[in-house]
Length: 303
Image (tube, rainbow, N blue to C red; front, side, top):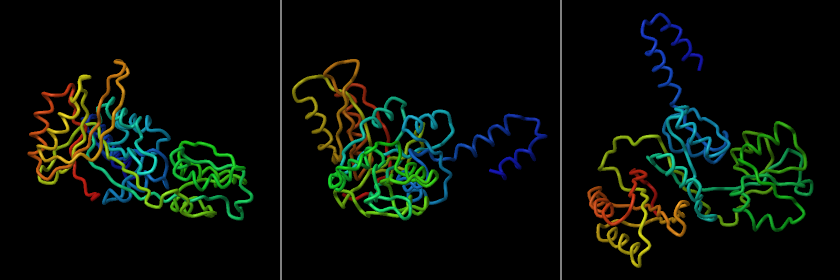
């Protein structure tokens, strides 16, 4: 950040104050907002997805992540959407929809959960295990072996590890990544404690506004629509997708709060030709209510 303020001081005599403000905002909002802190799985996605080093904006809730985009504190954000064991993170679908965010990419991360504590501690010393609710859920078979240990839900895996290190908390363990153990100098008491070894989470990269896309590289889209409560209405839309050579990879329903027993559908589709998606979109926009494109992007994941 020192170089940035030096640059601003050099420009101090500029007669156009807006130029300095624009320069400052351009450089400030290159941050990537993440849920959690450095050492978290969201931070790991930033390191793997972006080819260059990016500064992160640490947020302890997904609501804070969204706020950082809206206020231009960050230009992009990483949000987990679903886990192969625990399922969909439904509130995040609602956040993306409510704030009209755009999905511009995705990244799949193998999740390896590890039990860690201060050096010198053993499992026999542990009275409480703190971690994010999703991490606890993913490790429940292991945790059932120790019914005497209290499970405490926390906001973030890595933040829990950092707090144990900073406050030298004995008798408390965290569930987090090996990277968090290294970063916060904790000892791993039990490695790879997730219930299913093939444990994967899908993260999406979101922005405030859609950017120009290269149609030759785009092979996936996320969309949302509503349907009348009529027999076969959903089947008809799915048939259109099939006829237009779209492959349905995800469908998630969410209740419309203002209208009891009516639902919105969040759908992910893949395709080989962008024109096939455009054709399907045109037809579905006639059949469905409030069709909304949440993002078109390139997916490199092969199921």
